[in-house]
Length: 265
Image (tube, rainbow, N blue to C red; front, side, top):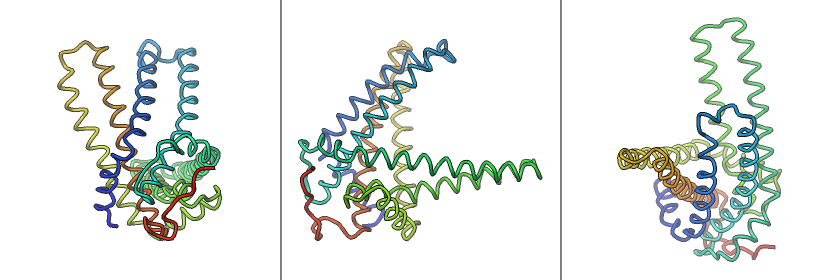
């Protein structure tokens, strides 16, 4: 499948995961509304507010990992069998929880190592030549390196779900596929990000116009709810598109030798 076909299929299949989208919407809305009073200017730098925000972030992350496993499992099922059984959502969340969490923590270590290397290299260059050109060059190199790393690390999580692979095996396979098809994957990822940004900008502009006459607090609540809807729908579309693309690159599309998934353990 080409980039356009992959994205169109992601949107068309999203209706099969509408209940998953509603689950993400509910969580995003709750977390967003809880965070509103914490984000007030008078709370900036308040130790208590910082502690509460940190605790909420940890709770959200723990729940997010679980929901990610459930959503990815159903995304795989939609591509392989044409349907998603919501009764498997919780089982998939439990089944893949440790693997996804381990992979995300591994991502943090890889990103930290990259930042350290780039930071040391940048500091060395700036120590010799600290001017606008070198600062711009360091920024471009850092941004390019980050983009390359993101593209290479897009598919390991899909290998965990689609191939029932372990973390290390999934990392190796995902990176290998990313390296072999780098520019195709980069183009797909860039298009998905662009669509996400454009949708957010258009909806944000419309909501901004609608809420102009409304009280500030009510405006914040409406914007939070709308943003939660966008942040719940678009990521599922992206997930479906990337899952389909991975299955195609890995030779495991629907109707293939592994076209049916085994029930969750």
